Length: 358
Image 1 (cartoon, rainbow, N blue to C red):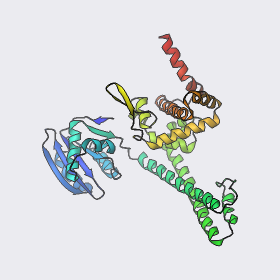
Image 2: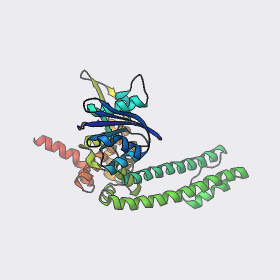
Image 3: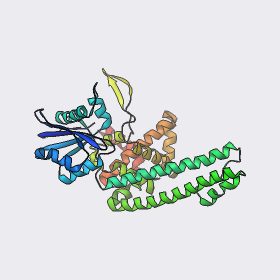
Image 4: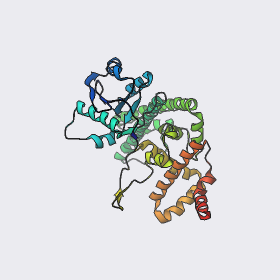
């Protein structure tokens, strides 16, 4: 966990909401200069911090409505930091809670150097990332409709659907399987929604691929050199990682991607593990998908999995493979090198030989 520890003369903690925000400005000696409730208005915010802009930092908890404030601070040249909502809840949770107390605690976390940092995704690529998330939502909606077709088919004990429903001709034949007019209308409604969602998803994918080729073409092409990673999965990896430089080590990146086990120790003894749900779930899913896809196209990957799962089981093998791909993706972007499958599978052997020489 990273903390904000830069010195400033004034620290501004904001308890932000949709329509209002409570602003607390704390001086470096601990004296409260401002503690007011304001509307979420750029003019009101700039007016209240105007006397302290010479040396001030603004801190906000990471909630859904922080975009406009981050963009405003960037335009005005005001330092802005985003707080990790989970860790902030653990640090400043107390018996009493209201907007005034929360804003004061955020300011004091900034002043004391215990403000847990989250990544403030920059303007420009942030909008593309949100569009990619929307595409994922639409894909899940389409999957739910396809599942409903199979459910209705099973309800009436009809022969199983052996055709791929991703083809429009097979989709349109679904209504003919049912004799009741109401059932046909039910299925026709699902088919119509699936067709419209498929067209919309395809349009979004084309737009996102064009945006990726403009914003960071080199990284997008490098990620697609991983066997099994195509255009869409490459988009997910690109926009969820964004900038490898924000991770000082590969271990930090693997932790962010939920690809490592977080051990808990006390008095020199291991007492279990936890924190598996802290990090980016989209990256964990993407590398899990990549580990499945590389097994389809790589004979070496299938041989490795067969050997590894004999000792540790298939679940552990897939987890380790996803972590290996995450490590490889980080170093690929750091070195600006394409995926080298021979080096990828022999990395552990080369490391053991190097240690043996020493």
